[in-house]
Image (cartoon, rainbow, N blue to C red):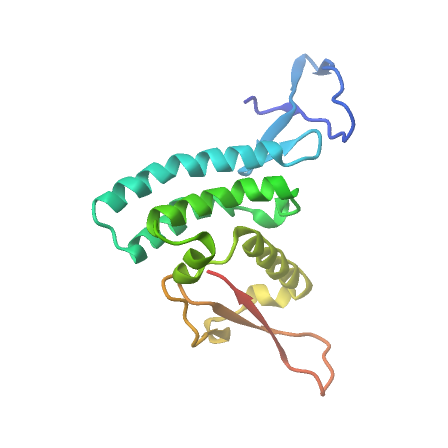
Length: 201
């Protein structure tokens, strides 16, 4: 992909390619472009991005299958999935979380296949409970809520380690929830002095 491209955002039918010259340089017109790991499409949809991350995550399932055959425990398999597969499926999710249902299901299918590898004898809902996971759709929603709360409470970006406490309710296999106690500005005396955000790590 060239460094300088022309991407026209339009929700109607795609416009025919038009030449764009800047000085003596011809700027290529593209229909989608990868910016900081996120695929932006000219028709304002996330189909291209979802296709890319599902394909990338699905390829990495082979490594999980191979490691599982070598005797990886359930917990170790969970850590492998979180490290090399789920990290791809949730990258920058607050940007593109507003998905059509069929796109959301397409992403969820990767996690379903993963849990079928780790827990081959149980259904998806039961595998979620055993692993301590939530659906990827709910995870995206949590990421959006957390992101918005950080936007409205900018002081939270300067949190010290003293604000971090761990919940006592640990998940069976996945890492525990991390609670962030955020200082709240302009609160009345009757209101709490901190805002607690639960974030899945």
